[in-house]
Figure: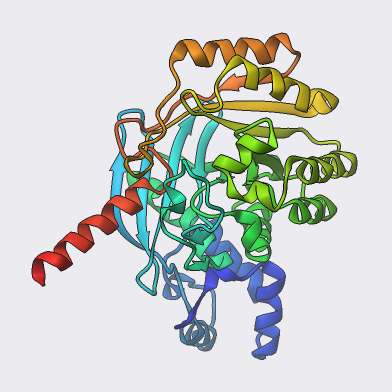
Length: 359
């Protein structure tokens, strides 16, 4: 199986060309064709010599993704189910935000973090995605937009899809380097957000890289007992270890941290939890921002349901009164398979049902 051309950063592409006796200035030409002209085959790179096109074709594929299902919601949110070259499937989401177009990308096939409320973890991690498979998600969405001839451009990226990004650290960092390269897609670092469930040692490594990329923490509970019940990762990285790493990140970068908090009815949504969250974040409140997220129910996790609007309002008011900046996340795509991993899970069920019917 050939690698995707999207796997390479610009320096890596330059090195590869030199190793294959090609002039290194060709790397910028190829890069321009890939990310500015957004061609879909090497044959379209008209200013490259025939022998180089032949070498590229022999060694690389273009997109490793095959579109399987596309769902478009009434608000424009579009959810894509892609099949990888080995037959596995992933999800990607395009969202129309007030500040522009944002794409949520997947970084792993399945997830091992084990959050008890999440559709992404219904299937255990099967493998990491390569940098090229993550980049290809952006390119597939951009090609979709190009085909609509609306002159729309992906300007923001959130790394919050299926999988734990920091469990696939090197590939995710290469992905970020590729999409923010000013000679390519030129997506600004501050328009990119990476979310982690709390791999403390990787938060420190992320801080040391000085990427200027935004950091979000999937928190969802303000104390160890509750967080360990709903997020298995808290047993390995309890709040004390997690916040030591967050404090290190803030000391190194002086950048704001977003805390994601899914509201689960009668689980983590009481005023008491809101008060505990205020106390937890008080030492860093100037650089803390809470994203309160209404829960998208998942059939397989029927022990959880959505908090009422009144409950969410009380939670929000308690945080604001405690001096913690917060917002209730606007919902996207509620009339399609909204929960992360849900489209993939539903499609796999359909395929299993077909196989059983054939048997």
